[in-house]
Image (cartoon, rainbow, N blue to C red; front, side, top):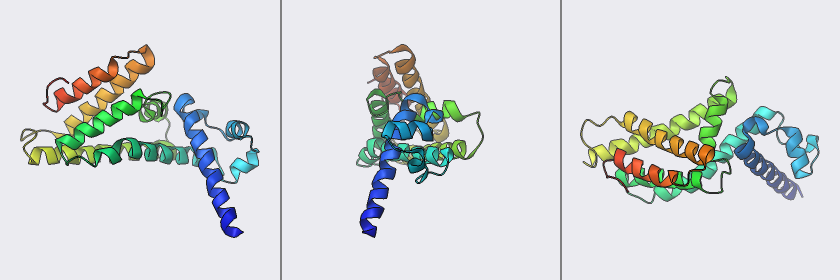
Length: 201
């Protein structure tokens, strides 16, 4: 009985986080509230609070769920590619596909969350900054592999390359969300290849 109860609690928690992520993807993390989730899931507020004592803990769980989504959609497929240029290209292509699809209704979750939280100190902002920093570090390592393999020129500044690659995705996301520009993904793919010395797609 205890096992079934624990499994049911995990399932309920996962259902809450999944719905919260969908809300955050359209209305931002501040749109995720205990009351709104309770109404959306036809639960009591106390039922939601049993799993997340505060809104802050709920938002932190949403960030973890977004990281897991990103891992499955971007990192896992890219790991099949050789470290270096091929993996960098796969990561960027999959990220552009992700922001162009339906998984995150309001475009790139990270771009939207960073814009929402960059001026709001606190644990949620810190967790977001740490997640993005881990991503940048992983990308920087891939640029380093590409330089070591002779795929990028000696003297290439990995941090500059990563900065530019992130900027491409942010620009594509803005064009898609603000202007409905369906050419933005194609332009982003071309920009990524230019930055990586591969010419336009």
